[in-house]
Image (cartoon, rainbow, N blue to C red; front, side):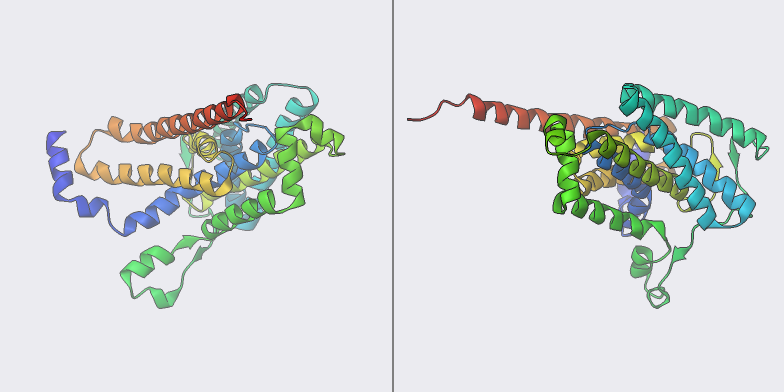
Length: 322
């Protein structure tokens, strides 16, 4: 370990250079989609912890449909459809039958682990993982004029089409939630459902609506993970990215842009961890990094929340001056 640390200090420029920006964006993107799927439901006071399972099922659906149809667009559509169905199931269980959303979400996550493993074996005749040259990935964006410059080529070329769309999604959600009547009504549903009902807002319908939107985004996240981020499906390939999205959403307080910043922290930790492997650091240490980042972000989010609550309570308790 000491020798590895010495090698790291001698070759620090190999770990932290301009290519780290590109790898951080790439590692962050599945988490950004997951976080946005959580952001939109959190505005209606629904913690969609089932986004992990939605992503996993979406990733399998995308690979399977791409393999059999030869179309990444059909694969994306199938992934979105799977996301809608799973989100609708959670919405009905929680909104109509009053099931605890955490229990419903964990049920979806466990179901996803089991069903994808079963279908991988029965449908694709593989176990563990599946890859094939017949899998059609998402197209990539390249600007040929930038290829001659190493820095510009690394920063702006060879992006999956879903990566710039991820940033567009963040900006669109930021606008919809804080600059439109629809967003105002949705936030009212989350903050005070009774007041929303009094104002004529159909609370249950709004909650069901955002759960469906969350399923769509979660399905896209899964499709990107298996056809954009990689070109393979592996058992449990989400590897906690859905939970990281939940943590990033909590870190950002449900704000899309702030949540995206939390996702970049995860992406940076993952990218640095991958580079540290080349210096002989123990694999157990590398595997710990994303979870340490998750615990740190959740702790920071809780600290900020408690601090805001203390400030609010002190303002209420402060005696009025005559």
